[in-house]
Length: 128
Image (tube, rainbow, N blue to C red; front, side):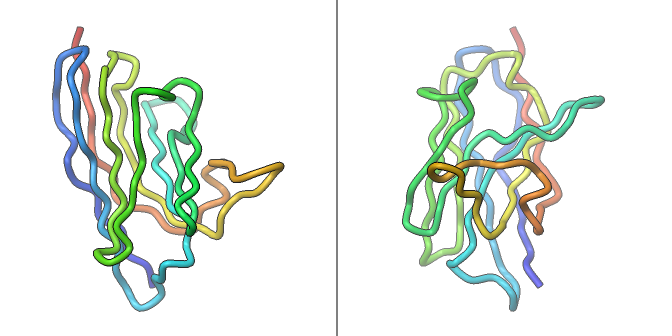
């Protein structure tokens, strides 16, 4: 069993910053999982935002490159998403996910179907 718990969401004005954190636990969790952040707005599919591989390799959606940074602390089993220069279109429920990793000419975020474990989500709202 893998248990993921997100925290750090909230409401900010455009141009502001937020840091999301995901704490992983459970008997089935180990550092061999690739971790990712997804986001979803009502009526749309869950969208991959960023992912980090077991060796620290990272990949980002084009829409967040240069603004978001994913990082992990293996000793604490946490994965963070630092978000800067937030835009109203970043408003969504943000989810942490764990999976085996997606590799297609390099490390990729993949789709929601590529991840077997999910947190409950944390809301991010960016006002203009």
